[in-house]
Image (cartoon, rainbow, N blue to C red; front, side):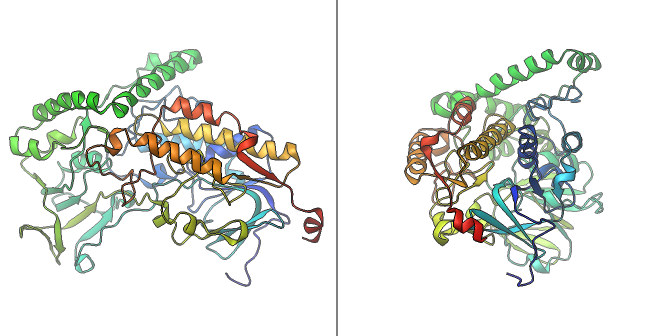
Length: 505
């Protein structure tokens, strides 16, 4: 650490530091203010809030959760233009919400946190920032989320390619794709959105697919002016619409727990593929061989028809190497290219994307060591041995069927309750009991074993390399709400440091 590191503009420790200015960090900040807790700072690594929706602006970028569900329950928006909104509309919603609740004034921008260390004698955390400064706090909330570090494949020869290369989350809007020979690697949630958008512009588009995904039809309806007026004048109608969407989404969890039912739905989706793709061989390549729901289910009406275009080809061979002006596949075939687009997703295993983010807890223990085999937390929020440290969208709290905003709100309420309960007890820190955390995770892994995520050799980004699912919440979301409504005293150690130690600090 820089010996001249300073404590940034605070004469004393702040009560709460929030790391990350996406939906999670914003929700946490708002909930603290609602509770009358003003002694907090939000640390954002970029120049603006927004997280995923600030960074991802590729052509066709939109959310695959309905707009009225992909927004805060306490900050409804009657003016969503469509069932599924684009990135710009979502980012504008985030900015409006941030301004309305005065979160900008509590945010320090260009403040990337790169480490955190707990002093158990003082019951304080020190957060190290990349600029050499520090922030000292009693509590801190890691709200950076799992989708912010791009997965960049290490193709042999990539460094000698003379053309343009960029990841979908770092889209170069100044680069004109018109008339270019483009190769797009990856067929995940981002690629199925930008591929149909750029296909009419380019001279030739080669889509490189490793594993096909299950893609279902997208509801592309817009909200009429009358509907938006009614939602604005009668908020109850908007709320009822949101409730309907919630339970409609929640019903999707049924085939996840009953793989045989998922098999029946597969037949319908296969017919959808055959109907939309003219060439039988291409349709075959686009049809998954794994159980529906094993990987993220995607939505699009435009992706499959893109392969009916004369200038679009699907390649299922692996990449052997990249040359100065071309790409070579494992079958020996070669394609000239002007531009390589990496729709290869993100590094979602925190053991990897946080490898250069040291976190030290009680008795000098290190989170990287504790997570050596798997990243685990109690309710995805707290980790034994790391007092007053909270996570949002932590281990096993991701979803494959409903809105992550629902989970974020549950987590923010839980963290707020923990902070207030500690104050009420006159304590300095709370630490989840190891036995409680282990029992929670043992039961979770037992239950996830019977779902489609672990059936029939399923392999997805939900899992670690060894197959353990550390990303998905394997139950209904209302069960998560029940578990996070309040903090149970018995689950935690509630500690008070010796007054003499505090006075000495």
